[in-house]
Amino acid sequence: MVLHTLNQAPANSACLESALKAVASDDTLLLIEDGVYWTLPAFEAQLASLRGRLLVLEADAKARGIKTEAVESVDDAGFVALCVSHDKVVSWF
Amino acid sequence: MSVDGMLILTRSAPYGSSAARDALDVALTCSVFEQPVTLLFLDDGVFQLMKDQSPGDIAQKNLNAVQQSLPLYDIERLCVGKSSLERRGLSGDDLILPVEIVDDSSLPALLAQYRHVLSI
Amino acid sequence: MIFSIVVQAPPVQSQGAETALRFARAVLAAGHHIHRVFFYRDGVHNGSALSCTPQDESNIPQQWQALAKEHNLDLVVCIAAGVRRGVVNEQEARRYKREQWNLRDAFELSGLGQLVEACIQSDRVVTFGGRS
Image (cartoon, rainbow over all chains, first blue to last red; front, side, top):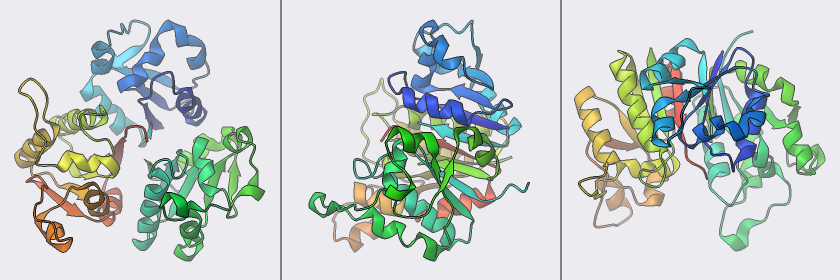
């Protein structure tokens, strides 16, 4: 089980595209920093092909005024817990 | 399946930034420390392996020269994303070294084989 | 668990350094151990003693220093990346015949071998990058 983090905003769609190919069904994709913009309804289609679990880092969504009812958020402690519960962390930027 | 070694994931084109050189430096250091290491080139990272690079006029060191020393450091597994290559109109013949071309569907399994993945 | 953190993002221009700092705090708060924080590429700027920050802004280098002193952290700036970008300690400054140096207290300059060693020793290695 791999934890993937992605911090790139939607203009860098290639980053998400590549990450999605690498995310397995038992992996988790954690959107951080500008990556949280992918959770906006406008990008639902792009995220549809995600096989694993989708999470967003709370502090980053809050910073950007993004409401995360549709997507589960984690705080910094949750981020650390994800690192522990997954085998390794792969960063996409 | 044993999980071992380092995978260096590199996705940037060479010369426009130092990322390609920085990734290679980490790979070479892994080898010096006798850590098994594989390089995975995705997206614009596949450009790093193109032949016939000649960066003298932009005052940079030739990446091809460093890449040719990879086998001497026992770094032989160079993985290249298939769709990244195809989207850029490239094939194995355009590249400086023999590579393992990896299907999109094989990426998760590839990542799973390594103890740590370093993105550079 | 043993964590190592790799920081490739510079403070100010990218968010990555701040995310890494918050992450480091969270790792420690959860009772885990940080083996090393390794600063590579433009991340070396996190080790500058000369960052001058207005009162109402966050001085990331200073916060790394404070965290390191509180928790006895090993903060390593990649020497090759650092000297090229003008983040140097006294020894390297003298080697390159410079009259000033600026590596912040609590950081040390060392080679990429320290990054590899950190990966060998750590259960989890987490990278924080910017773009380019």
